[in-house]
Length: 122
Image (cartoon, rainbow, N blue to C red; front, side, top):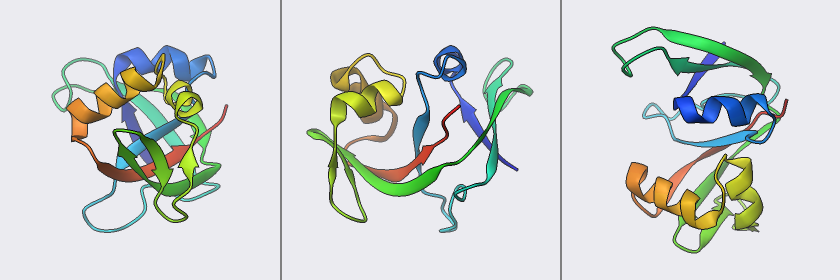
């Protein structure tokens, strides 16, 4: 089972069903982070990241996964070039609005950012 770690402040939105997806950097080996229909273990660090144990808070099944690009103007599928509704995506990713989501991705990864969207509804 693949493990997906989250910052602690995302745990409650996931458990409440508000956050049901995440965008992650592609793996360096080129393999997919997960596959559709696969169970994933959602975890947070009990203390300092990489220096403490992880605590599983949920298991979910990946409904779908596809490549995306996050840029200043929004999020679009990299495979079809379809722009996603940035307000809906921001909320599904656990942010209050698009501006907050964009600032987070810019600080964490820099923009534009290419990744994979994993959708794991409750």
